[in-house]
Length: 153
Image (cartoon, rainbow, N blue to C red; front, side, top):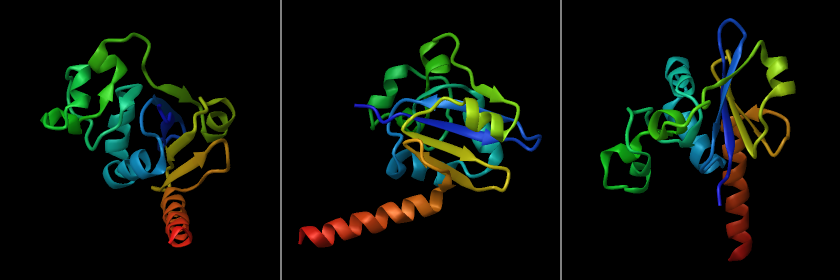
């Protein structure tokens, strides 16, 4: 079952671009990948400019067979898989918003919503909640997991 997410970037001119990502939207996967591999605004913009994503990976990569995302022995497994670029689906480009307020009011809602703001930090909203720093959300999840493991012992 998919954990859907959206990934957005606020550009220097204040506009926001957003794409949909179908698989692994939870903090421990997409959240960490965004934080570790897409914190450079130019790299994040490249990621988003290609359009809607099936599977987020460590690099944007190049056009490849859509099913390469299933074979971990294939070097292309580390490449992000896109609906438009890699499966030739139409109408899979990013969505654009005039500013962050318009984005918050009109954007596509999914279980996890990631946005790289112009302050250089990733933020996340989980299940329609308030946006918080991605680093803090991941740290909180790790704390909760540690407490659950303590309780299970």
